[in-house]
Length: 324
Image (cartoon, rainbow, N blue to C red; front, side):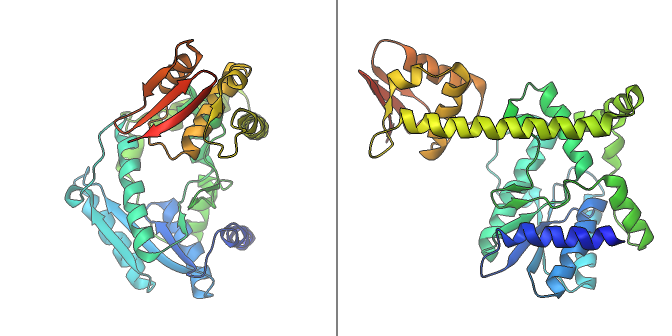
């Protein structure tokens, strides 16, 4: 198919922005159709010596047949002379406390695992097989959970070291290509389980939208594009406001009066940007930011503890971060 060549060229352009001298790309390989499709796409770039491909598979051990998934991935890589790293989550020293759904916990496990493999091989890119259908499902998951504008813009093609080349490719397109080329892949039996919110959205909510209005696909793409444009505008406003609030030479000390002159939304965005800039470890939540805003808006000075080692202090018209 011509689309495969087009997609390969598109992926090449995405990688070109991120690749360093090592040219190493880590692929999160689950064995499902999405990651298998991406494997064959990246394998062509690997064979052309444009990248060094290394696959990474994490066996969560949550299904009795999960070990078969790992064996499938190992066989696929061996048949294509591609290195693969396989780990079992049960034997892995994860220091992660469950803070949400099982799906979210699995995502955190994989991120820690991918980061370890990335560091081991000094890779610049971690490639993931998320596609357009995943993007739709993620939008509605975040909408139902009361996400911010940032969350509603969906997954990004380039997100730090993570690159998702398939975000504009539908699941059906992927399946058609695999079937036409007689390439085998795994089917996750939990995909039809109503236990997971993502499955309920995939199997019930999105089909209902398509039944309600045949223009759903077109209007969804327009909505996502509009949200991204507005998010970009808000990010630019945040950068400008940040420069005004933190206008000192070191940019570590903020001006309370200038902060209070901003709208509530911009105050939150500026404070969030500030904490990230200062490398403060924190769990992003509306409650966390609102609590910090209340402290800064109070007329009394003092200190507000962010966590065990970090705090925000204020005196007169200034506020700053203290670290133990």
